[in-house]
Structures are given as C-alpha cells and as structure tokens.
Image 1 (cartoon, rainbow, N blue to C red):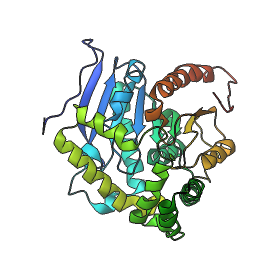
Image 2: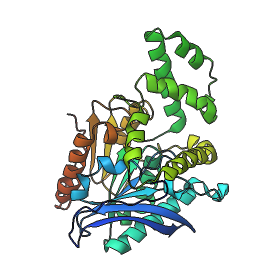
Image 3: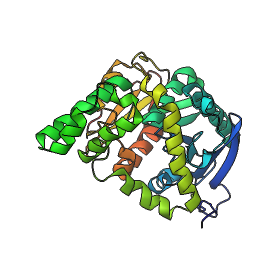
Image 4: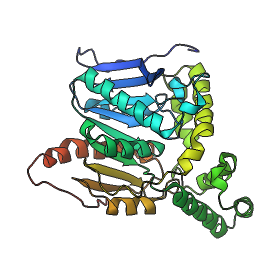
Length: 341
C-alpha cells in the first residue's frame, strides 16, 4: 500500500489495455497510464494542468465511460506526479522541453497502437501545450480539445483578480477585500502572492463551482491503486517544484496570435471559470480559423468541467469525436457554430 501501484484490468479480453508504464521521454523516465477496452480504439492523450497538477492518481475515476470508446492515456508530465524526481534539472523545466516531450509521447503512442494520428485534450496549462502541438504538428493529431483554455496569461490574471475583488465587495467580505486590495498590479508573477488571490477566487467559486478542488482530488487519490501513499507525497513535491521552476515563463504566455489551426478544435468551458476567464477564451474561439470548431458551455462548472460535470463532459466528448469527426470526412463539411445547452 505504501509503495505498490497498479491499475485494475478493464476486462478479460485480450484486446483490452490497462497498463501503468514507465517510458523514457526527453532523456528521463516519465509515466503513462493507458486504459481502453480495445487497443484498436482511437487514442486520447490528456495534457494535465498546473504546471505540475499530475492526474494519474485521480482522473481515471472520471474517465471510465471514455475507456469504452478510446484508449485513454494520462501522462504525468516531467517533474509532476509519478514523473517527479529530485534530480530533474531545473533548466529542463521550460515550455519548449514540454512541447518536445509531448511530441515524443505522441510518437510513442502512435507506434504502440499502430495509429497515424491521435486526439489530444489539454486542460488549463495543458491547453497551452495542446494549442502549441496543434499549431506545430497538425499531421500528428485528429483534433484538439481544450478545457479551461488559456489565451493571454497577463490579461487573464487581471480579469481573475477583478472578479475576485468584485465578488468580495458585493458580498461584504472585509477580509477578502483587504487582502486582495493589498496586492500590487503584477502580484501574480510571485506565486506566493498569487496563492492569496487564488484562495479568494476559490471561495467565490471561480475555480470550482460546486466544491473545492481538494474535495475532488484527495478522496479519489486516497482510493487510487495507481498511486501509493508515497506517490501522494511525490505528487505534492512535484506540484511545488513545477510551479517554482515554470511560473515565470507561464506568466508570459500569449496565444492570441494563434488565429488558425489546421485541425478541428473543440473548446469546453465552465460558465463560471475565472481561473482562466471565459471571456478571453470566447474571443480566442471567435478569432480562430479551423476545419471545424465547436464551443460547449458547462453551466454548473468553473475551471474543471471534466471533473465537475463528468457525465455531461464524457457524453459530449464521445459525441464530438465519434460523430462530428465522421462528418468532417465528408467533402465540404465544416462547422464553426457555438454550442449552447
């Protein structure tokens, strides 16, 4: 229990895959969890948030239905979760290295499952990687699915701050107003100060709408067979390490110049998301040209609709990737509509 880890079998079928595997990526050992009822299903690679919020230890609980339609791959990225090591070189923790790692993971999965292309899902920090991969290597991917889409970090952080302060004032929360008002304009570049804003953003439901993130993650991680108790400590250390090494670079991210992608793009946004404010994601979506693009609102979610409304999210993803991609194959097929419930 303290040191062992495994993933349960999906079925007794010889075609199913349920594998927790260590792979050498980017010159270091990194971990992949691969689960699907058949190795012949399309591959769906998840790019988790953070940086450093690895999800092998809790995400599979939410993905069981997806495993019936895809080979679902969770990847604990460099320096995070099972892929955290105390001897990782800090200088290797940068966006370009992560893009290179993600491409290598993609090519590994293509070879392993004998598929020319795979799907990618990017959540929050992972949405930065997802857009970069779609832009640079469209030949590798069927489509990109973005959740809590990042666009312009500095603009987003300022909108996030304004929301938290406005909510504090409207709710007469004197302590929140005092702590938020004490932050300087570029507070978010210091992650210690950012935590103050994120604390109140969480209180006012701009991160998770229904319940705090720790209530989603911790119980599932404690029940997870993929993480041992020692791995939970590794998870915490990896999250701290990743943020410390990468936050300054992340703050400078600006994807507004990306106005065209050569693969389908499907964005999923929580109606209450002020962790990565939805207004900027909407503008990004409207300015983007793609062979097909759709937008889906999740009315009872903030930054994590895949965890807050998993049943709706999974049904939506299955519909998109199994039906709309079939439509794309028809000559002249195109869809740029906004979806609303």
